[in-house]
Length: 574
Image 1: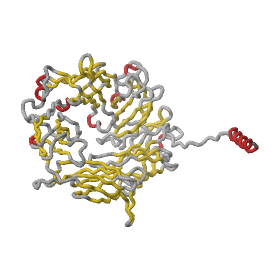
Image 2: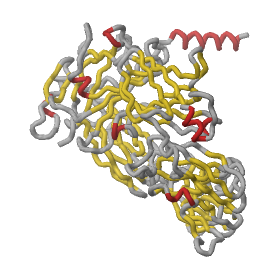
Image 3: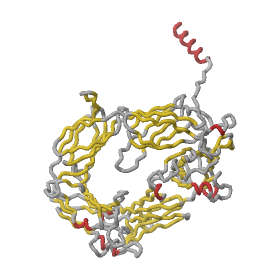
Image 4: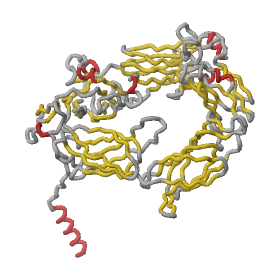
């Protein structure tokens, strides 16, 4: 009992003791006149003034920027939608009553789109589907916001809807923000075997309601070769084609542009119908390719892919005989002297060429094979591949400390591989404010910057600066967008730059964060100046170098209870 009383006495002392606050570190603050605006080291001719809110701001027009506003699911106006705003809309856009840019941004309205895919009777006959009259075809529709060259870099995402049966027939209904889109109607199985996708690069929506109807076989949407044989493909494979498929797609985007035909027997002659995909001579346009692919459950059997130069290649799609698949086994490891230490990783095998049994074509680049496999904890792996030349990409598991690497291997017979990886690059640098103060306790984020499809994709990383603004991070060698993110509320913008990180060690040098160009307090509102949008995610994209480089994210914030955000942008470098 005495012991229990003593414990209760100690608990009482602790409960009555004064709670000690803990210091939360903060970064340097942009505030004037405590920190004179003339102290910032900027390019000649760039003016910095003490602006509204006692904030040093740059009086300079920034480079072109784009704003993406993602509406939360809790909003009734346009839940889950993404709106795209240009700098012209923000700085010179027209307002509505009670909401005038740039202090207040009324979002574009939303259009309710109704549409369907209608196939004419004659078109049905051509593609091999007898119909008594024109019929609506079940489709899945994909709308992609049309932003020109920025499409691939600004993550607006695709918007999908599926046609359902209504009293008016099979149709889809979709709500989309005003704007311009690329629209693709994909006929659903089994109709995708006969009817081609309907692709329109520019569909403009600017009314409360819109009708987007595609009529296959109409004067403005005929099949590309309804009475000829320029879309007829002949596929042969001695070992049989049962369950195989063939189709035409765009070689860059990989978007399918033709019907998708199932094959059988050892030789199949099928039509691959398209619409709107002709060149001026009536042949299939450039930048297209035909794909012959095996069933999904086939193992170690490559696809056949070849570029179409006018479409003559369709007449002779001959799948060459192949030797039996071979087993590739081995280990992913690091090497120290003669000692190998294995570690877990994922591997991707992608063919450069495939070995065939045809003496006239012993190596075929038109045959493509790709497979992925994960190792065990000791880095050991086993897989089966068609004999050929391969590029192997090794992605070590996070936390192992090893970098992504590629290697080329010839695998023509069962082979034991030792795949070596090197440690990540030790990257370091210092982040400072351009008046000389260290940027303490800010974030430094490295995200992949992919210049081309064949480049190795490094992995993202993040670090926190210390009391001197110094930071370190382990990176895969490769191209990065490096972003310095000051603490929220300090009044400084993100600073963005690009780097190509080399192996072993890399110096990011001194990253200087300037005072911002300020877009004041911007209020995001529903159309017609109605209620504010609360909890919207607002992202700003720009080219930090002011040239023709792809845009990157240079600001990110969320609207508050009043729908307001403060957007701070770094000035364009000289």
